[in-house]
Image (cartoon, rainbow, N blue to C red; front, side, top):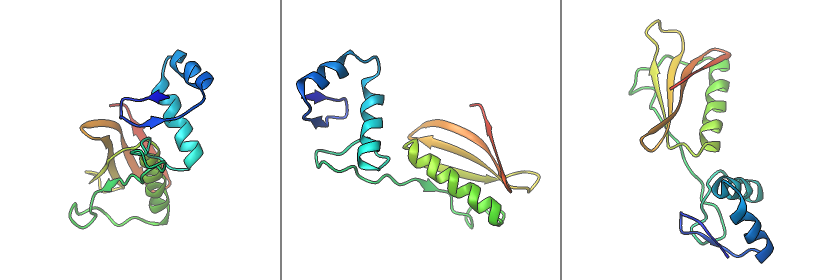
Length: 129
């Protein structure tokens, strides 16, 4: 048996469990294996044997008075939401840029900001935190 911090228990072969315990980062390995095996982005199954779908809260365009996206910008935003799901992010915060060309974004998991950047047409620019 393999025990994880998230209190999810998996039954695996004794040899595999022994090998996993010797890895320097067990959690990353197990999360990666679950994503590959189940085709989902959520690293926990809550004992059901199925990964629950994680949703990413994206800012409301009307509420934030964000500029209308063209087709290229929409494709970039879709890719950014896909990245957010892969990173198990919980929030994608969008704000208008001061020069009104594109939007700035902040990708966070809980209280931790994972990534910041700018969406402008066909270009997505990432900035260090």
